[in-house]
Structures are given as C-alpha cells and as structure tokens.
Image 1 (cartoon, rainbow, N blue to C red):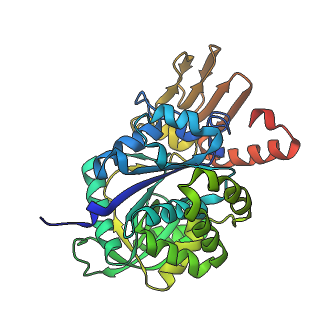
Image 2 (tube, one colour; image 1 turned 45 degrees about the vertical axis):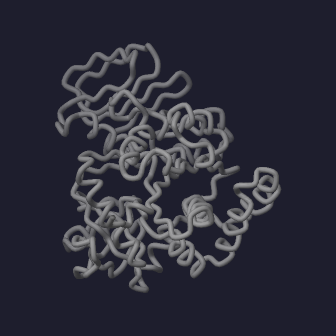
Length: 372
C-alpha cells in the first residue's frame, strides 16, 4: 500500500476576526464567518468545512475560535470532534492561533502535516482546490512551508504578494514554484508594479506544512512565542491543568500575523514554496467584493442579501444587505453599498468599501462598543 503526505494531513480552520470591513453586518458577536455571504443557504464557515472534509475526513479538522463563538461554531459544525475545538480566551492574531494548533497536533501525532485555511473565504472548483492542496502537502512533506497562490486580477493592497521563482523538483508537486520573496500588504504603487510584472501571486492564506517545521519557523523569528505555544500544548489535553496555564501564557503571547512571523522570513531563507491555485478565490474582504460575488460578475446588477429584504430599485447597481423589513428604494445610483441593520445603517460606494474599517476604528475610539 502506497502512503502519501495526505495520509498524515490535518486541516486547521482559524475562525477569528470580526471582518471589520463588513460592518455593520459583521460584528464581534456575529463575525463574518457566521454569515451566508454567497446565497448558498449556509454560512461560509460551513462552506469551508464542506470543502475540507473530503481531504482527510471530518475527524481530522481542528477549529480555533474565540470562547464567545463556541456555541455558534458547534451549531454550524455538529460533527466537529470535541478535542478539535480550540478556544482562544482573547484574540492573539494568526501566528498564535495556527501555531497552537500545530503544537497540539504535533504532540498528539508526531509528523503530522497541517493545512491552515481561513474560515471566511469563498472558493469555487473543488477539484482544482484539492489538486493544489495535495501538491502543497507533498512539498510540506519534503520540508518546505507551502503556500497556495492566486493570480492577481488587480493591484489590491490587502493581500500578501508572493514573488515566484523557478520550478522545483519536489516529488508529487509538479506545479510548485520557489518563492524569491514574500511581501505582506504592499502600498498601492508597489502593488501596481507587482501585478504589471506578472511574476507575483496573491497569498490565499493557506499555509501547509509539517507541524514541526512550522513550529521551527516560528521559533526562529519569535522564540518566546514558540516557548509559550509548547507550554500550552503540553497541558492542552489535560483539562484540569490547562486552565491556569492558558490564563498565564495566552495573554502574554505576541500579536503577530503568520505572514510576518513565518512567510516573510521563510521566503528570505529559501524555505518557502508556492503552488499556483487555478480556482476562483475571494477573501470577501469588503462590500465591493461581496457585491461581485452576488452579481454573477455583471457590474450593472444590484445584488440583494437578506431573507426579508424589501428593495425597490431603478437604474441602480451595487449591493443591498438588509436585516430589517424596512423598504429601501434606490433610484439612479451606481455601485452603491447599503447595509441596513436594526441598530446601524451604512451607506457608501464600492470604490470606498475599504474605508469601512476606519468607521469601526472611530466607533471603538468613541466608546460606541454597543454597535461593534
């Protein structure tokens, strides 16, 4: 019987972050991943689970989420195994979340290969997605940190950019490319240059690696973080011992994205590879993205989300998200964004959709936490 890297594969879903650019739809108590953003009839967290379950089975999926979201996550994912629910007492960013999962799984199953996949992205074409993951797992088995990259369609500044090098000779990963450098969230001028050059891919926030290698990379750049993660993993499966250690160690962990702690330094050292993903991918980062997802790609359409939405429109385009029964009438407005909730109303345009995060920051500073 031939064994492959996928035989040791474990999926990890970091389900954190509120998706502040989707406020007021996405809130602290109802984050982005708990919404149906595509009209599929289920949340995008459930869509993510359904996409990952065929890779290694439902019993080999771990979800890292906040304590406040446990009930909602378990309601969405009824077959999620209890030992695979990892709860954060407070957000500490992606290095801590993914690193803790890696440390726990490596302790349970030495040699395990993990793939981390965001809970709130939309992916079409499951066959091509699986093909990319299988190749990335083979690269991980060979000792690399592997990413899945997406061909850029615009100079977006919210993504990491992967500068691809030549082909590799990794067995089982014929599409894998060397990574010359990784730059997280460049400015617009730099992003324009990257896209024009044609040899950059977007980082799709999929990290595939042997758990021990991922922890090694974290230790190189953030040794104190690694020490804390290993201390947590040592007691994680002992409920009696876990609580005091979590209370002491977790709040002291540095807040840093895995893109900075792992991807950038691993790329600089030649330890990062990328597998191009030839499937449709969207991180649903703002309402402009949500509008595109729900308009069938036709810019002239008005996308409407909400079970009880009451929208009258004439010569208008964009998106309306309604959580009330209020009548919303749009006449002659283009690329409009209207989000109507019981306690907050957002009106902007697709062009300004990225600026919604600034509204959230202003509300937080003003003490208006009741609408966050």
